[in-house]
Figure (cartoon, helix red, strand yellow):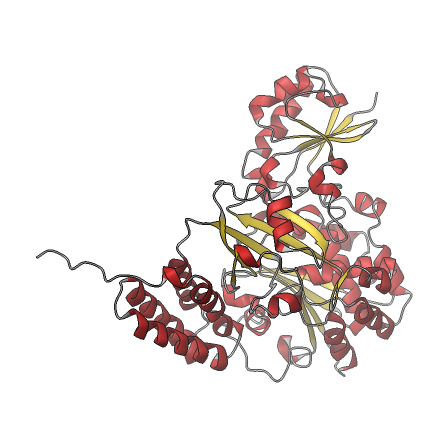
Length: 519
């Protein structure tokens, strides 16, 4: 009798709530009962409120149970869960759960399904088909396919990926580089981490396709140091891919060489900005560069460099395998394909959702997220990280689309959504934006370095009720200065959450003077 495959996530979110202990108890319980099981440490399916979610491979498909604690394991075995037996924690077929059925998973189609480090498993589920097709094309043809797909940078700016690649492709140089920006620092974002921990070969494949397209031979993944599990998995995946001849001196036996390394950042938020990241990669202090020249022409070590986000590279293999038009058929307007959405904050069901552009914020938060965890009314939703705008409950019908959000003076960013109920103090949130910028600024330009510090001081006066109308006027003037004069988006976007909080929730800024302390 063959061993029953049992899937226990090794994703950091699952580990944080006891997945390692669950895996160990399942192994010991099966051994004690004389049952042959194979425990596969997969990625998370993204239903984080159900972690650790254990799946059992049965004749009718994968059956999910969750959230499973170590103390539940014996009872699960008693209920025959190795054959999909009934139990209070039984959720049903994983693919038929409402959260999964409603999604359109292209980038995350394998996450939670495969053994992350198994090349055979990756290939069995369509892996490396995009790379194989890319090897049969010229660099120019690959670039045109990416352009035609409508893929835009998933890191925040939304710049068309194909145009960036074409610039590097057309540049004359003896050395070119591919750099993956994996410095996922936005609050409420975790898609990059999940992808690295659940399907690391996907980004490797996407970066290799980019290298072939533009004529690069070296690549670097700049990973935030706060992701030790992702770092470990990526390192092992790169070693395995090189040993299998998938990357290295000869990509799949071709004339193309591509050597890939992981470099750890030191925890600076500013390294999410591409030129600051490049400075850090070169071993220098992470300070933003003035542009031009663009990194596509003078990037890493002053050579033409493709710098893209993890999710941008990860979308490319699907595009090459299924065709540019198939990808462009998803989405709306100038926002094509799918967006991995990360839902967090005060929400009942938080996690990873991948859907075509066009779904509304309300559908994401209320239908899929189940509303607030506290049960109180939604008051504000921040989209796009700590420098994104706060939207009101009345604005939730906006579609997840670059242009739709921009028209509301908001931004999509990396796809992170953080929900707040009616107990939130929006003046405090505005102060936090300035405080965050003051701590994370690279310090190169005065509007950001000094402006954020002055912003904290102005907010403190407003919150103390000191000459509120005058200080609000100063706040608006300071915000305009930072927006117009900052060297990069760090200082330029800091006023976005501040002004959205002030404009949408003015009552939180109308503070009475604090009482004088008794002598």
